Length: 363
Image (cartoon, rainbow, N blue to C red; front, top):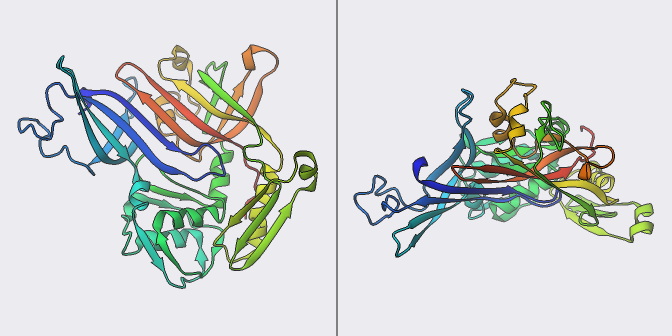
């Protein structure tokens, strides 16, 4: 189908570290002047395949290297929309989403489940008869916090996200369509590495930044944290922050059955969010940027598309920039929490949503 593609746009992730990952979306616009994507045209080479819930994979390749195609989005087609013009121009648009859309339409019932680590609880839900998610499409780390025995009956995705939130983990769908859970320690490990380096003055050691957005405010401010579960309630405050910025309270209902772990979670939020943070929120990289040709990967020596395309949610990066080329450089360790791709046969940009570095210790 590649020869018919006019444009592709993907979007997945979230915009703040405290938010929840939403279903990934992709829109593909095909040239339909030949009616190749018309489900009623029996002479179409795809006749019988232009149907909803068809599996779809968007991949990219760098013609200069031999790594092959790198998946950017894997999901299902939800809708086909067709546009016809009297001039003869015609397009077919596939609206697609990833595995979270499937999980959001499934329910699960757990009756007094055994106390278990978060990774085991997630597997329990995914393996349940009402969800039956393929094991080969998962990447679940063991977990570090213990989930309690409270029963549950309701939406499967909501519950899975609650398990992840109960230890400030990372639960998302990767580029290959796998449902992934990074537990507390793995989230820490991934976020503190420097899988890629970005800079406004790139040279050979950094990916070139085309655009960059910075946030500095109270969007994530919380200085009175209340963590609740069936095991009890834990409250942690930062009185200095409260005196400076006034009280900003947030309650976190969790499934954790251990008060010590709940205290660890509460301290995590206070440590990271009791004060406004100056952080890069978005950065854009263009594959048309000639400076990108100068980049030399410290891992492969080349193959920037493998790094850029294989760069996934939760991965750490280093961002270095000089605002307006005035003053000294600002450097920030960050983690990717979302990204968008806008591609046509002639151009392509990657826009990353970035979270400031979170401070936590291994447990």
